[in-house]
Image (cartoon, rainbow, N blue to C red; front, top):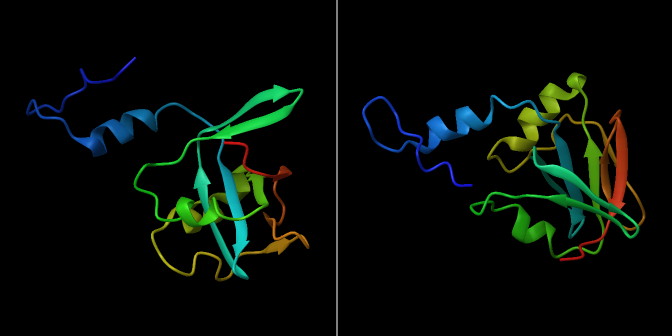
Length: 130
């Protein structure tokens, strides 16, 4: 289904309006992070879905305009941290379009470069399937 019938009061299509409509549906937020060339890099995703138990697969959807994903997809291991209500500040920081998203955030990295957010409800150490 395509939400192409959504228009603003003035009759024009407004991407911000559509984003606000999408935001009315409650969903969880996950942080997708890794060390890229030794530097912490990550972003939030609100489209995190369990796909399969056998084999174990999850899916995240990323905005086509993301400048973070092209760099994250080059690493071997990516961390997915399932964030809780108490992580509102973390969500805002990782969603911001700034260079130093990890300043003052509490996180840790595995020897493989998976980066995980402290206090998350759950962590996954992932590799990219496709």
